Image 1: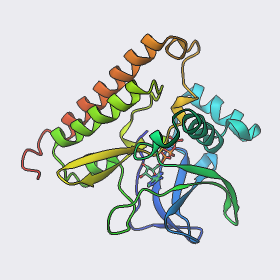
Image 2: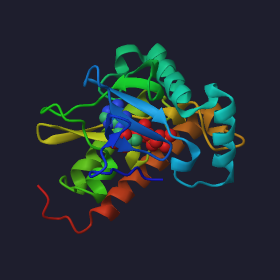
Image 3: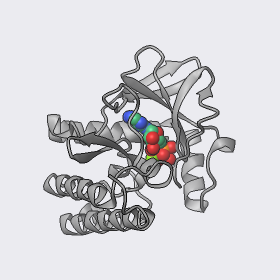
Length: 225
Ligand SMILES: Nc1ncnc2c1ncn2[C@@H]1O[C@H](COP(=O)(O)OP(=O)(O)OP(=O)(O)O)[C@@H](O)[C@H]1O
Ligand SMILES: [Mg+2]
């Protein structure tokens, strides 16, 4: 489900909202704007999903280590332990769970633009404020896909809400802000996690699907910069 932003309702419990995803709300950290805080939303505020996802949410409410924040933290730590500084510029760093007056949050580096504002999601640049041509965004997907394949990273949830876009000279870069899918998937028998070849093929399929979505969303945008 795509994330949505609420420009007129951008405060939540006193915090400045960056964006609202399907399961979580991402806000700026009031103590340091270089960080953001992700809060798992109560059931009533989440987007509607199918039976398997509902079961996952039920489990997460009863076993916090199955929640989105703990899952994302585990995925990030696993990749960081294996790739070290190789994650920089590809994944937003996660720093741990923090107790806030609003509830427990996952504290992450907030991906920022040069002017200090949070980078916007790829979804935002496809459907809300299209400002880059499809070719440039697809080239950024190519580069991200090559990094995943070179490093055997089983990141399968390549959806436009899980990346933010950062301009860089005449290119743009994608930074993943949600790596949960490295450790959690929807498959009952996760063959693509057991076989390197299947994993690589699945990453390539998902990257291709993302490029197709970008081209479909921006097909009328031939006059973009
Ligand atoms: N580290 C970050 N820096 C800048 N923006 C972020 C960051 N993390 C999240 N965001 C913003 O918040 C949105 C939602 O983030 P995220 O994917 O982590 O939550 P979610 O989609 O609710 O999670 P889930 O995948 O469990 O549904 C992103 O599309 C992005 O706009
Ligand atoms: Mg997400």
